Image (cartoon, rainbow, N blue to C red; front, side, top):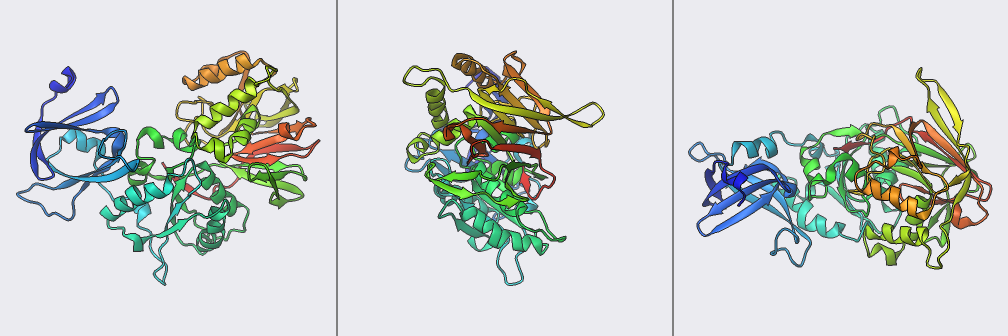
Length: 477
């Protein structure tokens, strides 16, 4: 035990009915830690594992002592007892926790967004969507071992919510179109606990934005339980500060409107699916293809590495798949130089008086370009250091015609928390939008990424990104 913990006075209480002493060090090397000591043993509960502390309603007060439960997610990394499954839910019964621990973790008010009123026929308006294809396929296990157990502790049994298990790439879109949208248009409040990556949010947002919405429309609330590969949204709004995959925020957070952006594509653009083997028409509006996003729209290296790594073989490697694909693009096996992408870029900015103007980028050669609403693409990849959670500000990051070594150098700086945005080889700025006229004969270099979805722009085509004018969901953060 560190000297710092030894200096903190112990508090006597109970855990699982046995006498223990508690010591809470709020500022340890790995965040806060609650140390439990009993005759012949010692245990540790790290803050990152904790969903929260609630009063144990199953137990009444005894001699003025309020029984409580520490709700936590135990992982195979933190507990050798969790072996066959990666994670498990544990409600630890305790009494007389240290006050500074309660100040940090006590949930004093039930999360209202979880107790939405059912329909007149009794069908629930709390939805759980389990995306079976997200990331490396952990969503079903997390739902069974953690989420359902955690909900039952706060009196939400399986009859209190409707569970949807995805069967295809279109499952979340269909749920949003057929169930969520009609109820929202009728003025019905709904909450969706979404076990997926960023793609699940994007599917829901697109289904709602591309449809007609009534004057009574009520924005559904989304609680994200991050099961994706990069989890850009979760990392950017702080869900991954805890090892609970976002469950801590669902129990303690507050719904906030989710900003969006809109991408207009030239008429011949199509979605690429099934590892690039199938083409699907984009939703149309005024002769243009339309896709809405909440995280990033990119071209050049970023779009190529997302597209190249979106295969069954690559997905087995989790988030390492992005680095693997990037290495092949930046340093090809045949020893050739990385591809430099050709296209005319126009940025839309605002002057000091708020008037919009356009700015053409003089150099038509680009190595890397993203327009993003978030700060982090991965936990440690801070691509847009000036972005704040849900601030709604689009920012562009671009590298021109630079060597593969310099691309790696700049992205390495981003992996270490930033600094790349100040480099003379990078262009970084707040924008209202951008337009790129792609001048590439090879289809491989005409792929565009919108929140993980890949769009192939036709030869001679273009795309334009603009801030979204409507927000149709709220995200718990």
